[in-house]
Image (tube, rainbow, N blue to C red; front, side, top):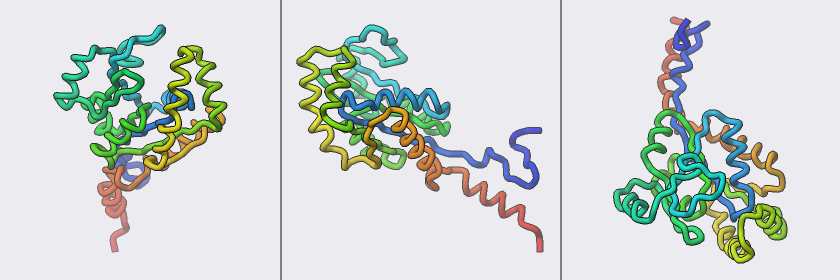
Length: 225
């Protein structure tokens, strides 16, 4: 039997179509948003990751087209000029941006798109796609723990670590621009909190684009007087 065929008087699931959403995770560097993002992607097949373009140097172990699209500055500037980026920002001397077309396609297909971006990018998404946006800000449990995590990554020089710590206070001042706040004491617990947020946001009436047809189908099954 087709999945679109009614069973025992139940309207077909195909009528329950949904527009995807943009899930933004932001935090000071080292607070754990990237770990939470990876956990979500591994656990939920309905989420896909926005792959940013960047002008920064490719790091060991990174894969072009999977972690980032690594491009040069002239190409980046051309994408900005052509309106091909949903958002873009200068972060620690490197340019980052989100290509627009794949995001539009995913949303129309009912896929949710995960963004691991800073407050600058979140502001630009708010200007362009506020109805699709869900913003989560991830805080560290303490500044000492933030510094410990930054040093534990062993990826950055002392100067870079100090620069990230100095910038953290400014980044955290933007918490009020977000819909949800999570203090990341434990990666698994924080991931579970984001899953709860995501599940609730998926059921917002405005995102259930097929609900009118579903209700009409239910009403059509009412017994005739």
